[in-house]
Length: 95
Ligand code: SF4
Ligand code: SF4
Image (tube, rainbow, N blue to C red; front, side, top):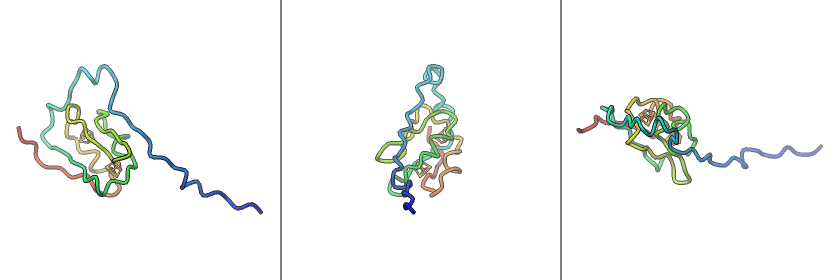
């Protein structure tokens, strides 16, 4: 019987871009933020869960990890709650 191929080795990091939606571009929700998330890239496993759940498309994931576009991040902290390795933390936004 033929051996099954290990498909987990074929998984590539998905490239999830910042929002390209025109209405989102016009509505920079970053000014609403009173909590500022930040990502510890040394712990990020590039799973893209944060980007997929961010309501404002404010997170981009590339080969180096996840990056937040603070023009659009409104500080809801869904990303922090969803991150499986807890590499997103936050502090109060300084205005
Ligand atoms: S805090 Fe909310 S808006 Fe900001 S990056 Fe995380 S999920 Fe997106
Ligand atoms: S959810 Fe966490 S581990 Fe996954 S890409 Fe985002 S910051 Fe990295």
